[in-house]
Image: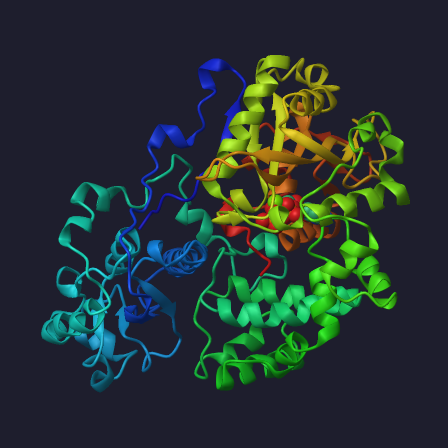
Amino acid sequence: MPFKRPLLSSHTTDDSESQSDSSHGGPSKRRRVSSPRNIEKDKTVLVYILQAKIDPEMMSELAMLVENYKVERGNESLEGPTSVSELNLELTGDVEKADVIVTATNMRQRLERHVEWRIAKTKAIVTPLWLQDSVKSGRPVPYGSYIAVHHLEDETSRSHDTVQDASSGSPSNMPSEAEKQSCWQTEPTELIDTTEVELLSHTAKYSCLRPSPLVCPNQSLVKEIDVIRQGRNVEGEERSMLSYSRAISVIKAYPHVITKHNIRDLHELPFLGVKILSMIEEFLKTGQITEAQRMLADPRFQSLSAFITIHGIGPHTARRLYDLGLRTLEELERYYEVKPGVSDEETMPLLDAEASANTEAAGEQSIKIGLALRHDLGQTIPRDEVEEINGTIMRELGHIQKGCKSVIAGGYRRGKPQSNDVDIVITHTDWNLGSQKVKGLCRKLVQRLHEQGLVTHVMHLSGFHEHNVLRTHHWDSLEKALTVFVSRHNSSRQNVYRRVDLIFTAPEVFWTAVVGWTGSTMFERDLRLWAKQQKGMKFDSSGISRRHDSKLYHPRTERDVFKVLGLVYIHPTLRNADA
Ligand code: DCP
Ligand code: MG
């Protein structure tokens, strides 16, 4: 079944095209029940998704639906009990524990191949549409219209009572037929081409050959292993960290729920060594990995992990601060003499002191800004706000230079419901003269945004390096500004500081930059490795070249980037090769 995927937002500064892409398709936002609720009454509905007959993309779509819903719901509950919706969803890999089995199977015999009949009879067995509609209406919709296996009609309809208890909803919140149809067509975007996905393989050695959904069928396992990866990261144990990152990326692409029955299949996958396999076994038995739990309880891990959430503090600096005896963010504030919420750093001179951007003083200034604004910068940014920020920036850019276009890259483009920052890649639509037209534009735009009160700080501003034939730079040969942007998006219309990265490129390297900034990090790492090891090429966000004669490639589309590298195109939402 082809699904529409999340928005690949692009934007131009042409007035005629200045609408965000999202306006074309009329994104249908999930309606929420906003009346007061008794949270006690909310029951968690444990959902088991039966893989049989559900293709991997749909499987991850469904898993993602639940995970995204949980994230959004989590954010809601922070706002207070009045807006808590009634649906508590949780995925389970254990069919016996499940309240609901979601399946595309409609025959008893087929179902019985996967679920014992005595168990099936105690569950609600519904079609995937039940999950989609329940999430959409924010309540568990009655099972009756979604019965998957007609032999179980009575059992399934009865089970609804259990779930309905948690709900006081009225049928008026049910999506209409038209809404049901448009459920997966909320945003105008390119469809995932299933024939292309079939050319990928989850057993491949490079993550740029594997389809990696945002939320995979083994997401809780991935999260647990990611704790250990993070432990290695904060301690600077890079080789070990990379091993865990690789293991995570392989599991992200594994399309089945791992159980004791299929764990042997994992032996055929790359990068899963004895140690990690025993951790997976432990996780299957206990739902935890001892080493991850030990790490979470370790005060040093807690301090270092908290420190690296501050912009400008990497693992090395975090350890240095820890060695000075600092343990909490409050202690860091005192150490750096920063008042929370107040950041009166003289940051704009950085615009004129490009060379100083990498000095120790600039680094410290960046940490101070990150620390002072940490309460805002630590909050994630919802997709509609990301789009709004892009819209505002492109409108301002239109006053300086007409004909520019942008693509929001980063996690947003991979389908994340919440981003930590906004990454915008910008170029000019004139293929021949665009390069000249974007030159110096980054600085001008930042200046203008600053004058408008939209950008308060610039953590880093780097110029357009003249073409570097040897292409020794990886990350710095584009015009780039890492800024703090003032967003007025939230409901109270209060200002909130957001991290926004602006990347300006010549048209010839625009799509390469978009691919380079879309991520995820492991996907990018493997793109570079693939290019080098298998194609004798060099890939990074500033361009693609052939190693032996430095021939440059100028892809005109994103698909061309993949083609030049000899790769099957992978949709951005299947590039989530990190946890
Ligand atoms: N990137 C990279 N190598 C780096 C930094 C970034 O390859 N050293 C790429 C991969 C990232 C993308 O750029 O996915 C954007 O970087 P972010 O740090 O903004 O990460 P994301 O956008 O993926 O997630 P989020 O911003 O929500 O944390
Ligand atoms: Mg980002």
